[in-house]
Image (cartoon, rainbow, N blue to C red):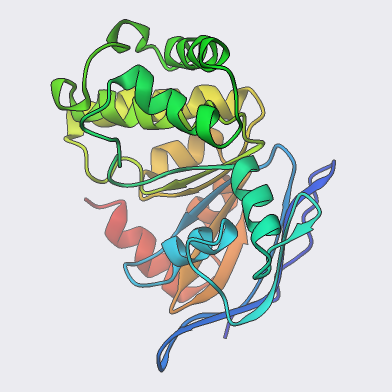
Amino acid sequence: MAEAVPQTSAAGTVAIRIEGLNKWYGDFHVLKNIDLEVAKGERIVICGPSGSGKSTLIRCINRLESHQQGRIVVNGVELTDDLKNIDAIRSDVGMVFQHFNLFPHLTVLDNCTLAPIWVKKLPRAQAEATARHFLARVRIAEQAHKYPGQLSGGQQQRVAIARALCMNPSIMLFDEPTSALDPEMVKEVLDTMIDLAREGMTMLCVTHEMGFARAVADRVIFMDAGEIVEQNTPEAFFSQPRSERGRQFLSQILDR
């Protein structure tokens, strides 16, 4: 049984409110009565065993997955079947995936300018200036005219982060952004994410990188079997998890 989820104590405006969220894949109940409130500027790390519903939860926030019951409200806009609401939320919520999803036939610069030009109708010069700014911010400006296949995995993931930032989102979602990388490339991506966190970006990150959780998270949410089993500060979660399932998970992942 999942414990009752407390209201967010962080000061400021609520960025995301999820109430009674349920989702099924056929007969499989993948998300069960999820309640979650995220404050503007809060950094959330979501962890748990494979198949616990972590990625499905954050994919519901920008309608990459639809939910069958409950409410999701992002910056005051409820996520419904209304395409205008979906577009409004997607334009304000950036997402970085496990696999980089870059267009291989486009340069790094063109990957970053495509959505601002076509979705936000920015003039090309303005879109390119924005792209160069964010490529510099993720420390990869010199790669602007290369193609994704010419970059390392860590560089490609930093391009994917820059591409998401080019839409000027107020919220960033990360779905296991380092799990497809070689170990030596993980640090450069995590350092980029840590920089974003320090600048006050609202972030939800599904990851097994517990060092990242300790460094930047305001809250760690532990999920199992489609439920939020517990949530706490990183210090409390890592030192004294409340649930037996949480203790088992930490003993396995921290021993690797």
